[in-house]
Image 1 (cartoon, rainbow, N blue to C red):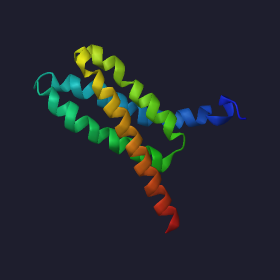
Image 2 (spheres, rainbow, N blue to C red; image 1 turned 90 degrees about the horizontal axis):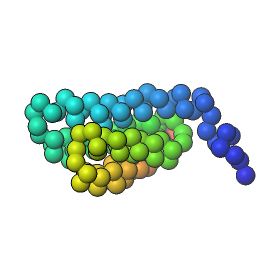
Image 3 (cartoon, helix red, strand yellow; image 1 turned 45 degrees about the horizontal axis):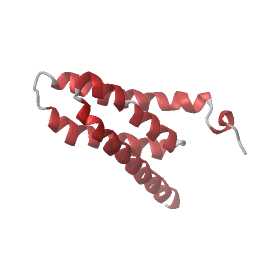
Image 4 (tube, rainbow, N blue to C red; image 1 turned 90 degrees about the vertical axis):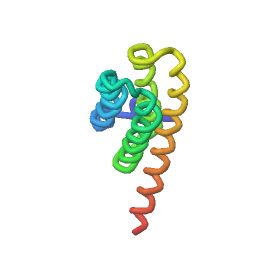
Length: 117
């Protein structure tokens, strides 16, 4: 059985960083910019899920270790609950996790389809 060092390398983590940066910008900059408009539900229910789906899909098409990326990306949402929202927003953690997984699976399907052509 492989140990963790063989499964994910520093090179893989470096490749993951731009996508993690996009996730951080999504979870922390969008709500920060939206505090002026105070239409936070639109951001939580529409914009952030679409961006999460897109980032998860693109990451799965281009890179490997999609399950680690989906987990790390979902965990990045937890601190934003306490910064921007109230504690009732923890439910979105489950939704965003599912959206990252769906995006990753969609990316794998696209990757498989592109390899067959």
